[in-house]
Amino acid sequence: MNEKIVFKYYTDPGHGWFAVKRNVLEKYVDLKKISHYSYMRGGTVYLEGDCDCGLLFKALDALGVEWGFVEKHTDKSHPIRSYSRFAV
Image 1 (tube, rainbow, N blue to C red):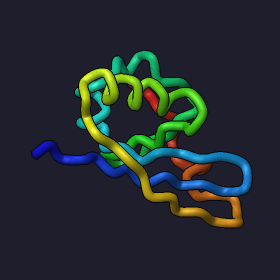
Image 2: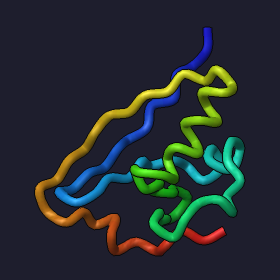
Image 3: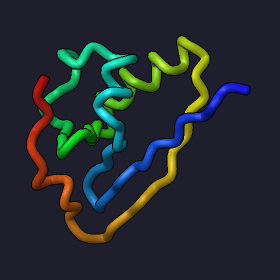
């Protein structure tokens, strides 16, 4: 039985980000392709929800890896916006 990867999808009124452990992300995606619209804090990358997350999801789909997400919404500006911009 294959394990399903479940991501947390953080949203605020203006945008959304998928939380992914950096070591998981680098297994599936060329990190140089991740834009500066994504953020990072500690060992977690917060992939912006319009384009960057698509790189990961396309790679998972191509390998037959099952995935899903759980949304965590706030009506205020999300603290993720204050994290460091993603850097390789």
